Image 1 (tube, rainbow, N blue to C red):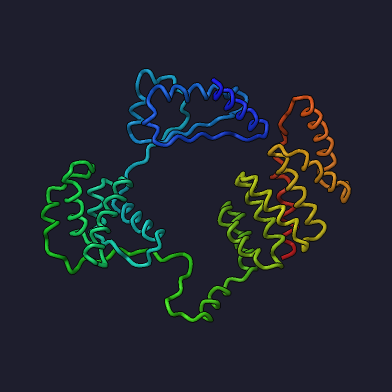
Image 2 (cartoon, rainbow, N blue to C red):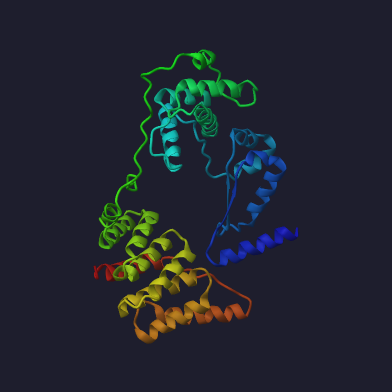
Length: 369
């Protein structure tokens, strides 16, 4: 009961900051009916006016079976959206294997097309089984010091692994035959997509590497970041702005733009850090600094840091008395601080400030390009 009250207080505190709590449960099929019922009781913390707590369950197909039980009716009625991920197709299995190899740092093809086809048949397109089969096959390949994983090698590894009857692989009658068949000289390696980041050949001169790196200028990185932000690709835009910001002439506006992207992603602490980074740069003009101060103040206010936000608004008013609604914000925060002292706190109901203020700052920073 004490844990319940502690969690309830945490929920209320986050709600006052206009923040929703997200509870994610993986392997939820293992919870059982009793623990799922406790989760249902937690959902009662939502008061009907605002969704304070959102619960996401992720699990194996057994979770679907569990939720269909009669005693789970009340819980199932609370589920708003449900989605079942289908197994990979044969093409998706090949793409998945290529993707995993590339992310692991692979630059050369390793599995043949026929090997990927056999992996799909054995795994039935289930990612976890694909991982296990490929891992076993690569272990066998390492033992034989081969540079390519063929369908024969996959068959040998799967045959040995399936003898214990534990790994739930798809039944293939000809698996034993494939494991002892002669090597097929026409079997070709699967194409591995080239990395998106340029790679340099071993032995390339330092001058060549530096020339390739300098091909992307800060101006190009900043322009790319602006385009990506307009497309809503905020994480990629942040990376571009960080690259541009390494040049002092772009450090202020790149940090400010990164802050805008973090705000769109609702990563408020990262946004605050980016805005503060911009304000610590002396290259910003007076109007640019005021705009960034305003964004910082609004972001601080959104997470309940009203004392620091109030100081920033007052600073803006002293510098530019008619700037947006800064004067009104000062008065409103004074009222909020009085309520806090009296033990009452009300969240700011004006949730559209970012969309109203974004255009002006973007135009101001963009005009300096």
